[in-house]
Figure 1 (spheres, rainbow, N blue to C red):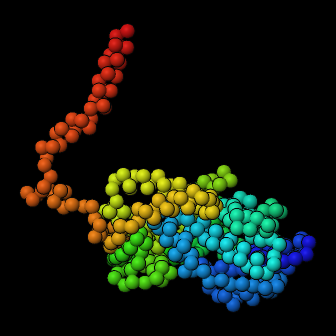
Figure 2: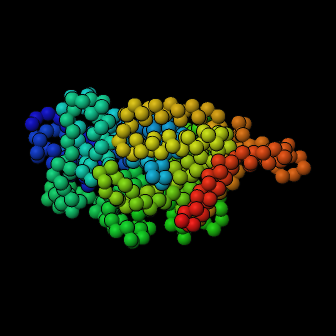
Figure 3: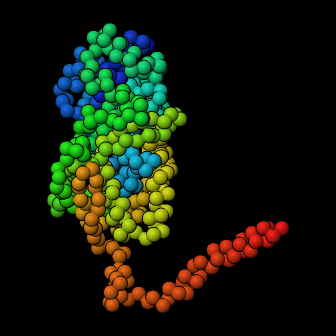
Length: 404
């Protein structure tokens, strides 16, 4: 089959193998695309590696600002955590990557889009679904999935075709962007063994962190962070700064036994210092400015939102609907949250907001309290009425049964 294929290219083992494989099997030219959302160290090196591997063209697209503002910020508003732990770093990046691949495919006249995803992972779904939604005419090519290749077989293929691979790539599979690093494979495949410190790049091992705490004050407006320690800054700069500050105190390491879409339980290690810190601060500020009903119902919405994003359904109308609800709750999520960073823990120590629902005159136990305690007697009597009636009926019934 002649023509062009656009390949999502990271320069890692999977996508390096994919370039050669597509050329051999499909007899097609390969256009590689690297989307920089916080993982590209050397643009020139990636382009050179792509060309040496055999691509006819290479695109490097800096989409860091778009990633933070259009994907990460909505996730902060949603307190986006899959299964209560994973901040969705990779999951948030994939629909943006898919969208840019489609743009390049349309520009270059490509008949297909390719990626290096395996048949075991979640990324195949995230990319395939988004691409097919944006341009159903594009064919999907996934060499690793199509040939059922194992990591060992990929390494052998790379060696036989003169494709260079890094030492770390041999040991772990790593994906990263501004919102986090995802590490899997190798020794991590045994969930009974503690992950070694060689998986870490952003978060210091706790035993190597400072013996003195550090404070960060995050300011939020409309549910998103806008300043650190009183300094206003853009989203990319802010996330990078919090990643550095929190990571230096060992914060953000998540060792997670995760339920993948395909039904496999997978052991993943994530590094997400900024995500862990910012979401913790955001959730705390919400408790200050939202009512109990809003907080409790939003938690239900958040769980579904995180599942949709994790499951590759960013384009699903329900995700858009849920975003509209979430946005409506964020109008008064404004204020400052101070966080204490120490030995792997990011703990909120103070919070304030012009929309605070905390009334000190009601809450205080001092003589200045405006709360009328006498009204509580009738409240407690009615509050427990149904429970008391049910308990008494069941108690009497159990006594009759015992007599029988």
